[in-house]
Amino acid sequence: MIRKNLRWMAAMVLATNLTITMPKSLFAGQGDENPQSSKTGAPTTTPIKHLVVIFQENVSFDHYFATYPVATNPAGESQFTASPNTPSVNGLTPGLLSKNPNAATNSTFAPVRLDPSQNYTCDQNHDYTPEQQAFDSGLMDKFPEFTATPCTTFPNLASLGADVVMGYYDGNTVTGLWNYAQFFALNDNHFGTNFGPSTPGALNVISGMTGNANLRQSIDDSSGDLEKDVVNDSVIGDADPFYDDCGAPDQTSVYGKNIGNLMNSKGVTWGWFQGGFTPSSVTNGKAVCAATTLRLDGTAEKAYSAHHNPFEYYASTANIHHTPPASITEIGHAGPANHIYDLSQFFAALAAGNLPDVSYLKANRAQDGHPGNSSPLDEQNFIVTTLNTLQASPFWGSTAVIITWDDSDGWYDHVIGPIVNQSTSIADALTGEGACGLGANTLGGMQSRCGYGPRIPFLVISPYAKQNFVDHTLIDQSSVVRFIEDNWSLGRIGVGSFDVIAGPITNMFDFNVQHTTPVILDPLTGQVK
Image 1 (cartoon, rainbow, N blue to C red):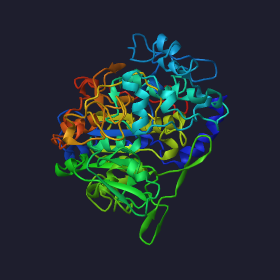
Image 2 (cartoon, one colour):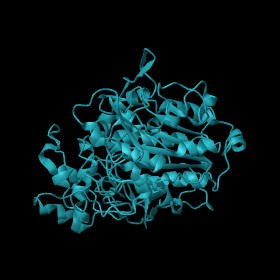
Image 3 (cartoon, rainbow, N blue to C red):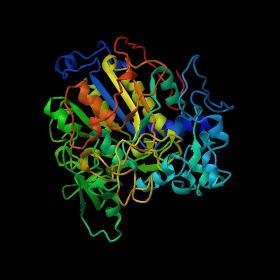
C-alpha cells in the first residue's frame, strides 16, 4: 500500500524535478563512446574517461547498511534477497543489536529498524563537537546523549524519543542502494574527512581542505553563530559561501586551490551541477534562489542550498550571480558559468554528447536525502533515475559513478575510524575537553580539522567496478580528490590537504574486465526491472 500511494505522486515529481530519464533513442546510432569525446577528452591513467560524483546528504554507514545483505522482508514492502555468496560488511552484529553500548545511559536505547512508512525523519545533531562527544573516545556509546533529536512532530517516530538516533533502514527501504551493492562495489571503511556537518564534507570532497578560511559577514552577526562555524581559520559549521548571491548573511570563504583549479590547469573538462542553481529571479543584478521542487509526498521544498555548493567558497571557481552557460558546448569548459551549473544542464549536456570529464551532481533539496527536507525514497528516486539515464548513454562504457554523502547527520554508527589528523581547539572533545588527540603533527599546522570523522557509505557504479564486492580499504572524502588527481595526472593540492594521505579507491575496480550490461532499477521500488 505504501508503494501504491507513492506512485501517483511520482509522475508529478519526476516532471517537476529535472531528473528525467533520457530514453535510449536520444543516443541512437552511437557506439560505447562518443567519437568526439574520445578525441577531445583529457588523457587518463585508467579506462575511466568520465567520472560522475553523486554527492548526497546526511547518512552514516550503519543508517543504510547496518544489516546488509540481510533484509527483514515483511509483506507489503519492497523485497530484497541477496545473491548467493554475497560478502558481509562491518555492520551491526547480533550483540550490537541486542546489547548496544548506548544502553549505558538508558536501557531502552538500541538500534531500531525504520520501515518505509518512516522514511521522513527529523534532522539529528551533526555538529563538529557533539559528534566527537557521541564517539566518547571510541566507545561509541553516547549518541542518544549528544546527537539525538527526538522526532516529536512525526506520530510514527515520536514514541522512539532520543532512540530515533539509533535508527537504521534495510534493503526494504534503501532497496536501490542495496541492489547497486549487489551488482557493483561498496566500501565499508569510508569516513568523513573531518567531524562536522555539510560544509566541511562538501569542501573535503573537492579539496580535502577546510582550513584557510576567511570569516566574513555581510551584516552584523549579533548571535555569534558565525564564530562557531569557523574556528582557528577552519570551517567546522555551515556558514554559507561568500561568493554566492543566494548565500545567507553569515558567510565564509576559503583561499587556496581545489580540484577545479588543478583540472583547469591540465585542460580537464568539469562541472558542479546543483538543483535549483538557476535563479528564480534577478533583483538589481543579484540572483534570487526561491525555486521549489516536490517531494514524493507532495511537499514543496526550496531547491537550492548555498552551503552545499563547495566551489562557491573559492573566488577562483565561483559563479557568484548564477550566470548560465552561453551554450551547451560551453558546459565543462571555461565560460560565463565558470563550471558551476544547474542540475538540468548536466542532462542537457549528456543528451548533446557533451559529458564533461568530471561531473559533481547535487540533487535539489527534495531529493538529496537530507532528513527534514528529503527521505531515502526521494533520494532513491533521484539516484536511480540518474543512473538509468547514464547507463543508456554512449558514454557508459568509460564512466565511473561514485555515490557518497557529505556527513553522517549524527546517526549512530558503531565504528570509529583512525584519527589521522589530531586537533586541540575549543571545538574539540573526542578525547577530553578541547582535545581530539594531542594536536601534534597536524596537516599544514591547522587545528579544528580532526579526522577521520563518522563512517559514511561509498559505492562505485561502473562497467569496471568489481561485482558484488565489498571493499575494506581505508578511504575518506578526499579519496575522491585523489582519484581525480591520479586518473588525470594532476598532481596533489597539498599544502595541508588530506589528499596527501588519502587512501585509493582503485581496489573497487577491475580495469581488465568490463561489464557493460546495464542494471536498470525502478526509481520507486529500487528493484531490478
